[in-house]
Length: 288
Image (tube, rainbow, N blue to C red):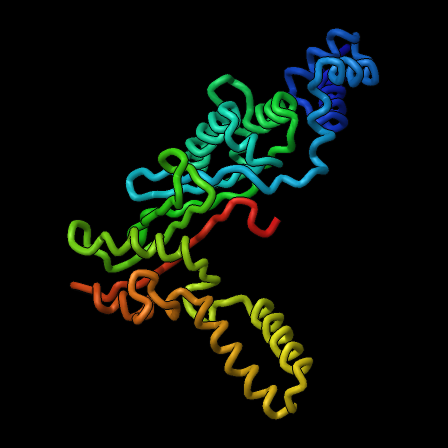
């Protein structure tokens, strides 16, 4: 078999089974290039079963954050059960993935093609881990915050280890002075983890979400038997509350509910106005 034919067969076998390059080559070598026998060979080895897991739902897992020189990366890796999320092989895989995610600046395409410490690509190690553990495992999402503007702060809620948990938030803030008022950055990250805002300000909340909420509010009021004129007035009040409750600047500060986040920023500003530039919040499995 020519090198081209071998590579073509390996590609075909990988697509059929979801198994890594090295194991596919071994299978083809053992079966003298017979695709069907190679599939059987991999199934007997317990490797090909990995691809059959991919139709299941993976909504458990871990989120991990990596911070260095005021740059931060975050990644979520999902499993089917919380039991697997506590498996040491899974945790070790996630830890190394978090390091590589920082290096690739959360580019998942690059990450999947990056070699891990054992010499195999991330995507091949992922398939091997699925085969070993027997559950669907997916690399769901990742984000990267550079250090070009503002300062970055992260918070891990109920961390199982440093930088590892189920809820992680990151916030980029401008106007904070290191050594003076930087504790506010961590508090903002804590607030985001607890209050789960949809956007920094009201006008940045996705209009589709707002329209859907308004539709639900109007239907609820109409079904309660209120007159149309009253329903319109009530719905305006309710949607205004929804926008305030879900926009970071207008939320009540978790550490002093008598004040809004926007007021806290003004109170803590020193040489220049503190401004929230960006934020992200991961809750493992949310939205799956």
